[in-house]
Length: 242
Image 1 (tube, helix red, strand yellow):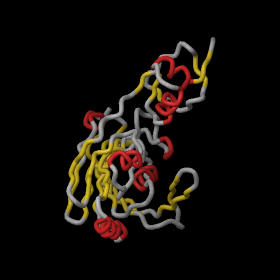
Image 2 (cartoon, one colour):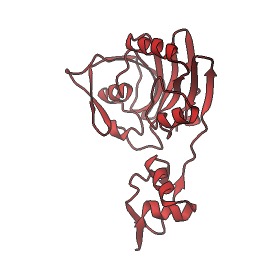
Image 3 (cartoon, one colour):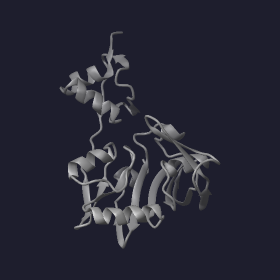
């Protein structure tokens, strides 16, 4: 059986450059059947047929002289959107997390908004599909410690900072559940770490105990601050629970 590096074979099949092919794999957009290809330089059978998932368009939610709110699609970095739109970020979402992403349009508003985040005066609601059956509301009050190296990683620790999340069940389907998570604090990876801590990790969140899935099933649904309220409609896969 002849083998070739995954990104090189993908480049041939899609008629794209090796660099573009590697980028698609690194973004988590390439599959063989329903299994995600995670190692661009990994060797695969030359008969392997890849499937490339499309990235949704950036949808504008609201814009005025102070702020631009967009519905960030999964598989795009927040920084890429900032560069594309031409404004600095007020918040960030992980690459595979979709939903409300805020960019600021003037320095005065930016300073006021950052202060509101620091004072925990911002409402943040997430929708997630998680492993297991969530049938009742759960309050999670567990401190989170973040270790920042090449990539940030967070964990529950008595040495961490206060972190509070409220989990509300929406749908139970087989051995997975759709939940709404409202966070009072804003620690790095808070929703993901807290859901892991109650044995209900986010589907697709392999870094925090979730089983492999087509994407990390986490969506920033609503953000409210300084009199603004932004809602990002859920992706179709969230509506169907698939």
